[in-house]
Length: 225
Image 1 (cartoon, rainbow, N blue to C red):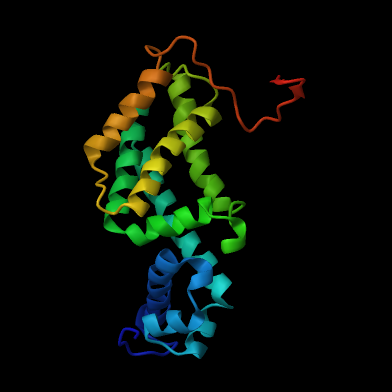
Image 2: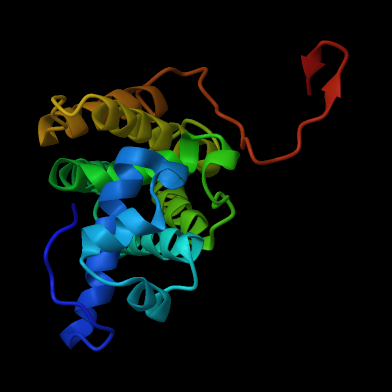
């Protein structure tokens, strides 16, 4: 049974659209894209089917706009952090602590993004080529490049370092999405940054030099070159 709301496409401040996004987020995070029906979404939002189609072309359009909304908010948070232009450690700590705080505050959002990135493509509209994903990653690459330029990092190419750190962060978000009782604390975030920097920092493992994984590699025989 859906929530009781007034409906209509002319709600103040697009209230119906907001409720549709919130209701869809709850359902997509719990049932996945395929499992959540349009009927359930409009019931959850307390609107009629015509209201949904006033704001969105179809369920896929709603899903894509919801994902973009989450990503845009993440990027806005990252931009606010990077404007302070602190050290590499400071930037990484603030980025991961912000991500963990968002996960603790809105688990549905984490589950939605995990669904987008890690589930088989046939289970949801393909969004791995979404420009906002690239924009988020580009900000992380910039942090690594600045760290390399200032001598705070010495562990390889900025893209590889960004991918390694993002994987470290994302895996913990995945665990949180599967086990809600797990708590992603600021101390955990700072500890993971310390773990990362002990390997990638100038005082870390001397032999570490991660290559750029996005460059095309040529395989010769049984080895990669």
